[in-house]
Image (tube, rainbow over all chains, first blue to last red; front, side, top):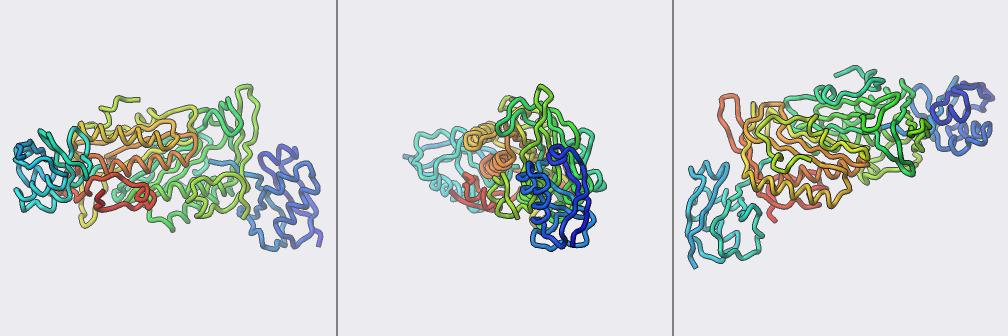
Length: 83
Length: 83
Length: 162
Length: 162
């Protein structure tokens, strides 16, 4: 089922996309990789960055194997560099 | 050849022997172990402590395999506990 | 112990204050790890500052979880962490990790585990600022669980997918 | 760098002063190891202080040699060490080791190597002082070269003869 979710961006992805947030229609249920591929298709110039990113929901990374459903929004955690 | 050398003690050995230093006649050349055995024979109640000690000459530990000769004195480094 | 919301700090980090948080009469070893701004990174020289941003609520939650896990795995007395946000000048601390333990082995292992896991898991980003004011996002690595293997190899770098 | 004669100190140790000695613009990691007086040791409780003595000239020479060796083995920026002599009260530092390095892995390895080798090689002794004023020499270990194996096993304890 196609559902519209809010997608939040940070750091290098936010800067590259020139937005901190957007609404995107995605097919659910979906795995982490499906969501990243969907966003990469929308923003093909940032494909490498999306595919090196992780998806977070409710302040935690999703399990790469899990089927995600009933989402209202996700955070896209582009490659991190804390410490 | 029997030679008289100065032997210096520290910490637990100095306290147990009630002296920081004494003159001892030893057979030279000798290995580290021979010197420690000689001192242990002189002070049999401290035998375990002597056999757990190291011999130092000129501010360095002697090599356990070396034959020591021409010594005027040695430092007996009883088990250490720095740090 | 300070509230976990204090883990991320916009103000300069205070080594002695964090050291005091892990004081413990049963501790024989205290290790203070400090990440500092250095003048270069891979392929970049003349760095004068770093600028940090974070997904704050998620980073606090993830770091607090890492501390809980490490406390469960390694018998330490206390652990305290502070990570900077915003601009940090050359030579200044970007992160402080204080660990106290009865024995040094536990202090070293816990300290190393905490910094490795924060680097691999916490949603924090830095930009390297050059003399001319220009900034570049650090290449970074895909967020993932730091494995024992990586911690042991002590040279975990680059991307690893879980 | 401070003169090597300062390695042993009868005065209280100053963390921030030693930290400042290893500052370096190329350092991305600084590790400060601190040995502290704890209230217990194996089979002994109620420790209120430690009393250190050393074969001073030999200990300074041996520790300076350890620092030279570790600098030769591990690419660090700077290393600085202070070890207390005399009476040190509960919770106070007995030894400080500061290491700066471009990367954290080198800082951890060097710090660990220095403390392990000092503990195994430096002619320094401590007495554990109890509440009633009585003191017992620490059992200690026979002086020997800390091997890589021991440093790796990270649990070198007790006696090992070379």
